[in-house]
Amino acid sequence: MPITSREWDEGRFDADESAPRTDTVGEYETDKDLILAFLSRNGEKAYTRAEVHRGVDFGESEDPDTVHEKLSVLPNSILDAAGDIAASGLVSDDIDEALAELVAEDTIERRNLDRDGEPVTYYRLVQA
Image (cartoon, rainbow, N blue to C red; front, side, top):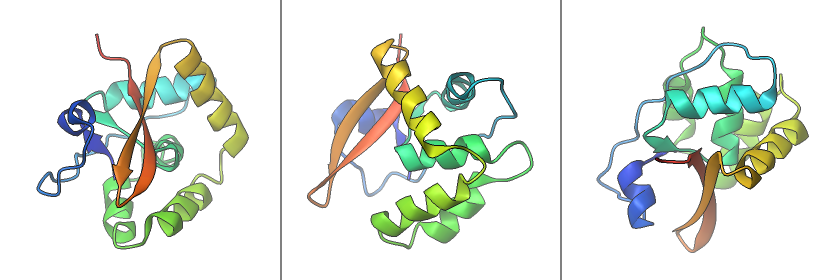
């Protein structure tokens, strides 16, 4: 589930915080451009790798919140697998490589938060 800027800044999840709405993006020439467009359009939120995969693969015709509602009752490991399956139109390694490059370029930032004793990595656009 995406997290809010407040959760990111505080470094912890807020059980009372409702899941922020995710806006989809259309097609872009490169994976990096697609990720940047997705994170820019959803600038007040941070996403896991699987959520980025799902978010960039929805295009303009699907609503990722609808999918999120259905998948949110599943354990994180199953949710990650479902995200990978939903992102079948993308090459997973390409997205992972693009995320790593964007982090190295200081265009997006990565942060680990603890969820039930498990580290969860989130990505968001670098905040000015």
